[in-house]
Amino acid sequence: GIRKEKLFLVSGEKLVQEILTTDRLRAQLQTLLVSSEMPRAETGANTLVLSPALFREVDVSGTRSAIGVMQLPGISAWQPTSETSGVTVFLPFQDPANIGAA
Image (cartoon, rainbow, N blue to C red; front, side, top):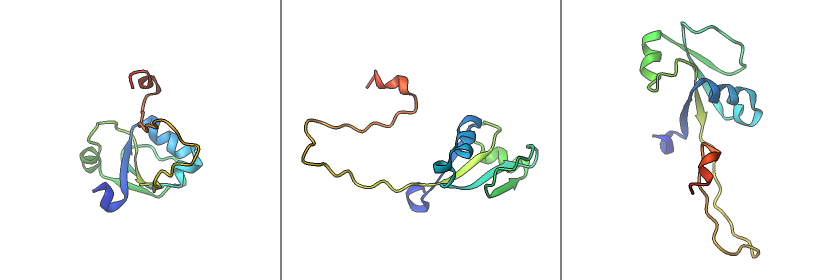
């Protein structure tokens, strides 16, 4: 579904707040999903207010905070240069402490 729609969900109070306060990330925010029970804050984002029951269905992780619908950014193919040597490994880390494990 992510590849087809080019959209994904971000949940968790800390992550959504970071999106709302970072211009580059906010530009990729398509919609903010909130429950009608949540306090309203002016975010400047398109906001869709859901009934509490529907919001609980969408909030599968049980974060009870706003959910961001984000546009999937395009990732261009890596182009090695003539200076490239050795091995280059790209690993996605959510927690920088995991770098040592890699």
